[in-house]
Length: 368
Image 1: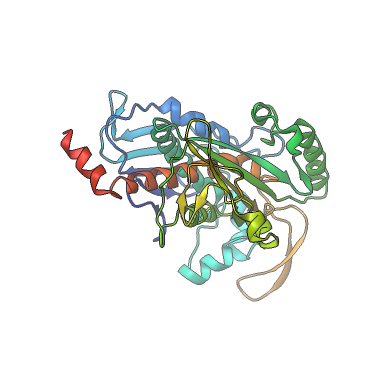
Image 2: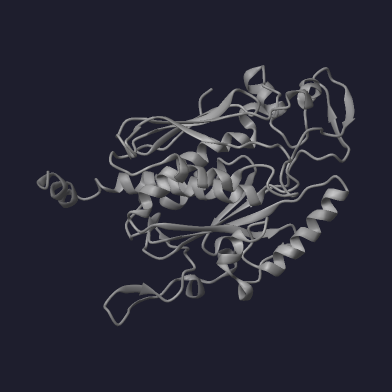
C-alpha cells in the first residue's frame, strides 16, 4: 500500500493495523545528537490513549512505546528511528460480521473498490489507531522544534453546538477536563450534550484549534510547498477531518481588503510587527513571524449503535447497529494527533529552509 509516508526531509512511514500485532513508525531524517527518551514520547501517546474517560472508547491499551533503533545513550544517531507500540487488547470478534457489509461513514466500501480486499478488524489501516505512529513521530519533531523556540497550544474549540467563550479562555483548563477545552463552562455544557448523544446511540463532531508560536519569518515555499498548504495536507490526512482553515479562514470571504489586510508597524524596539493577524501567521505561503492559528473540523464518529441503513457485499439492503468499542466524540483524543502532524510539517519545513539562502549554506560549512 502506498501513501503511508509523509515528509521530505523529516520523513515518517507509519505501519500496522488496528487489530494486528502492533502499530508504529520509522522516522528518517532526524538530526543526530537530539536528546530523546521513551518517556518523552510516552507523554504524547498518553494524551491519545483510549479508555481515559466515558467519552472515549473503553478499549484498554497501555500504548507503551519502545525505541527499536536510531537512539544510543539517550541521543539520536542520525539513522532511522524505529518506534513500536504493541496491541494488547484487540477484540477482533466484535468486527467479524462487518466483513459481509459496508458500515456507513467508513472506508469499507472504498477499500474494497481500491484493493479488492480489506482488513475488516476495526478498519485495519483506516482505523484511528494508525495515528499512534504519527503521535510518536510528532513527539520527536516537537522536541527538535522546541530547541528553536517553536511551541504548540492545541485544544478543542467546539463540540457539536457548544463552543468555548474567548472571554473565559484558560489554557490551564485544557488538561483539567476530559474534552480538552480551555473553558470549564463550555466543557461542562459539552459533556451534557454528549451524554444526550450517547443515550440515543449517536455521536458528535467538533473543531480543534491550534496556535503555533515562535515560528520565525521565512518558513515555507512561495508556490508548491506553501506552509499553509502543507499544514492543510497534513491535517487532512487525519481520517475524520472534513475541513481546515488558517487565520480568519472562511470568514475572510465576508471581509473587505481593508478590513482583512494586516497592517505592519515597527514597535519601540524596531521590531517589525502586525497590528492584526487575520492571515494566521502565513503570507504568500511563507511564515510571517506571527502566531500561526488554524482550525480543523472533525466529523462525528461514524461507528454508532443507533440503527443505520446499508448494504451487503452481495447486493442486499439491510439495517445495522455497529458493534465494538468506539468514541462518542473523536476530537478530544485527536488534539494530540493534530499537534503531532503540525510538528512534523514544521520540522520538515524548517530543515528545508536551511538551503534557501546561499549565505546560510556558506556560513554552515565555514564553521565545520
